[in-house]
Amino acid sequence: MPGEFDLIEAIRKQVKSQNSSLIETGIGDDCAVIRPGPTGLRWLMTTDMLVEGRHFPMGSASEMAYQIGRKAMAVNLSDIAAMAGKPVCAFASVALPRENSEKIFSELARGLLDEANRFETSLAGGDTNSWDGPLVINITLMGLESAGGAVLRKGAKPGDLIFVSGPLGGSFSSGRHFRPEPRLKLAGELKLALGDGLHAMIDLSDGLGGDLRHILKESGGLGAILDAQSIPIHQDVLNAVGELDKPLDILVGKALGDGEDFELCFCIDPDKVAELPEGIHQVGIITEAPMLMVRWPDGQCKDWELGGFDHFSK
Image (cartoon, rainbow, N blue to C red):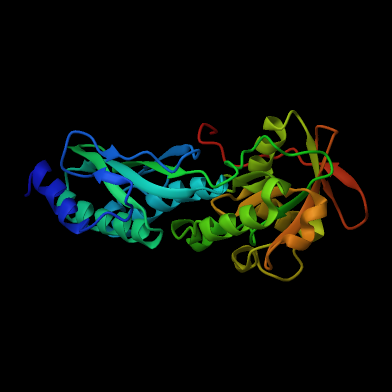
């Protein structure tokens, strides 16, 4: 079996050229050397870890390594999209199970590079280890904010309209959670079209019912009213529960709580609605009262107490 440095060299050969002129030195030295970004633009950094047995089934690493690699990169790219930034370079650290480690590494690397190349992101370094435990992969991603600054969670204001970029729910039952689509292009379009009218944004990794609460909390303890009939239900939910005779509250619960949709949720100045691109969905409004409510078809607004996915929940 190849040694650690053989595996690193194999990766280096696949990274034939850096996707960004900002990478002065990539894989092959003690550190990567990153040139300063354009004057006035700040760096964005994010990191995310996938663990076998938590994020994908135990014993599946050998068969799913390519998908795991793509997802590991994609979920970090989605974080950059949530701030309307541009990804530049990534660093991957991997703990490989000893059994089938060569095959796992090869497919994992292929998935990482395919996803990185889709979005002109350079794989600039990382670390590899092997052990008797399950597969663990961690990605750290660097990007640049867009002109005008990063879009944060904390900018929502009472009266803002809440939108999501696509249908929600059913990602696990369908396997779609292994095929996240970072909304980088849309995020850039929103920033360009709305400017300062784009007040807050987040990517939906843990479900709208949980992630929207992060915006509300960071924006000073605001609230929101979601319109049950306006929340886009993914076809995957309907396929899983059956389309006929299912109460709306069941479908809404799946859309708000399933997680791993990786769509964008964003809050905008209502005067900017005409500037929005097509294909997005208005789902509610930001309120001063610090409660997350759902308005049902009969007009009643009820407190939505359920959150999204929690890694520390039982």
